[in-house]
Image (cartoon, rainbow, N blue to C red; front, side):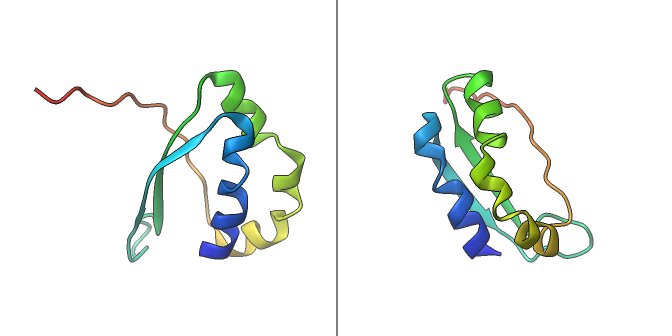
Length: 80
């Protein structure tokens, strides 16, 4: 699975994106195997990244390895 993620996350910089963190867990009992925090400059950039046709080139691999993908928009709290 890491190989697939490495491929598609490699497209982020072309959309102005940056990987802030990748957290790997056991992926047991419906919990995510991997959680990513990424930063993109806008919703349009996220849409372009998610719609990048090169991601479709890997769709068979994704469908075989990944049960679901969920995108949550978040903002980081300031440390106080």
